[in-house]
Image (cartoon, rainbow, N blue to C red; front, side, top):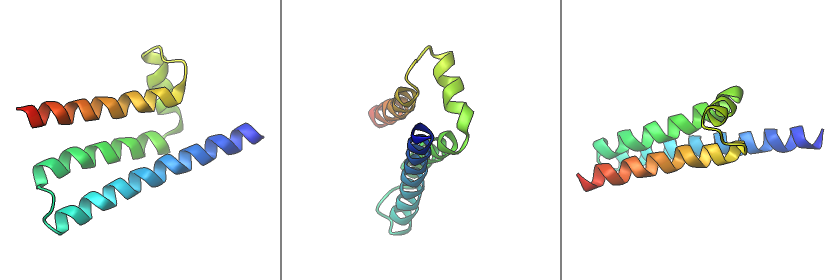
Length: 92
């Protein structure tokens, strides 16, 4: 029972973080402090984290396909791939 509560709490935290990221990106674009081409990359990241937080089995499936035994580490791997994509985009 306690494990289920902890998992629901973690999912809620991930969903809240994703919504805050998307809201922050929209606000930065509205204030013209973030260019649209960068906002798209960040919104894709925020929506991806939101989908992974909402769709319960998707992250487990991705972790299993990548042979990652600790599911939260798979979320970290997804975030790392987006940061890597941003770095490559900035380097071009």
